[in-house]
Length: 497
Ligand SMILES: Cc1cc2nc3c(=O)[nH]c(=O)nc-3n(C[C@H](O)[C@H](O)[C@H](O)COP(=O)(O)OP(=O)(O)OC[C@H]3O[C@@H](n4cnc5c(N)ncnc54)[C@H](O)[C@@H]3O)c2cc1C
Image 1 (cartoon, rainbow, N blue to C red):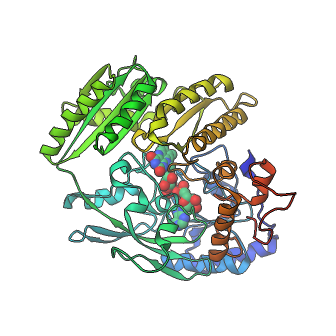
Image 2: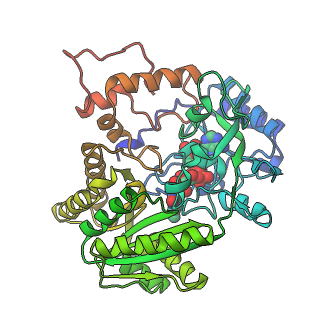
Image 3: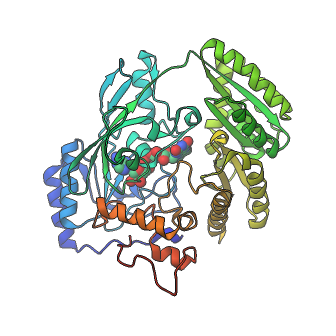
């Protein structure tokens, strides 16, 4: 597990006690956790192969308390790791043994709903789905919908620039966040964006999206709300080859139609989901596509006919249109339940997340199949096909010696494959500790150096979530993935974190 090195500086017991006393002075008594059994629930996120107990966990309830925590930690030079719901899948909230884990889960107020301007102002611990639930009576909703939306927080969504089924048409988190209040490591509050169409200056609002808790703590989020479409309809198409299904995805988009969602599942995922959810999927198919169309009644009726035609012409064995709302919900339940469904057929699975240009879907899925043979581990594919965002689930058994390491190597190879065809090593789950090595493949030294310079501008002591998302230049050099001229590391003056 290459990402696991704990580089936090030792904290002596007296300093720890002073820190606890200072934190208890600014927080409610039960908001500072320091006993091993209290810390255990915070040892990992959704990528549970990486675990470590934090030194302390704090659970502030107000923005002022968060500010006080940040100032205390900075004074003690203690690393600080922001945490939402801990559903991340790249080890982004993996604690440091000498660091403080700052949970934002108790800041869950919906501060303002403005239906005339279709915006809502919320605190970072608000769950993604809770925003849509709170505005449903106004005929509005918040579009980005990670499959974890029942649990994950909007603060975590911003930090990961999360996506979901509807992001093909409505964009990622960055396209749906209009403003942020952010706390710097100095404890200063920044206001980035205010809903106006354009703002002068550098686009720090965009920069914060996807910054993985390394540049600042998100304290408040101004989100864009959309009117609920009049109608949504879903089509299910079955194929006897992954390549044909991949080709159909490219054809739909090339045909000028942007579906609200366009998802693909391969045979192992179809079987697992059907067994779990009974969605009515054709279990003999090698691949299925789920294509959702939304808009006015008229638009949807027209597009359903067009897409149906396209799917049949692209070699679909059958195309079904959900007959009613219940069937539409069932089709989606299979897709949304696919991860836990795969969890039922394998002791462990490792969910990868890479993005490729849509036109290479067939080729890359074929190559993943070959790699599955080479590494001797099965794969189930279930993913946001319209975005080219792959989620191969590598099945393994952590109790078998060496299998976890093989799964990690296999996963790394898949991400490199994504880069080879012009894609990226992440689509929505972030880099965390999981994909540090692949960042060396994705970026050249010059680009990584700019990332480091940005980090240093926001957080010169590297106290905010250190060791995540951006590999040190040394690490890349050691991997042989970065060019080092005559043994001279470029930019030796830059801090390594
Ligand atoms: C079953 C399942 C399905 C998933 N499906 C999707 C999906 O479809 N799309 C998708 O994008 N993701 C998906 N995820 C991954 C995960 O849910 C998202 O990355 C989500 O945005 C994480 O939110 P969280 O509140 O759990 O954040 P956490 O896991 O707690 O933290 C994630 C990162 O955000 C930082 N962070 C958290 N809060 C703040 C804050 N207030 N200020 C600054 N930094 C902060 C943390 O330091 C960390 O780097 C899925 C996860 C699971 C378990």
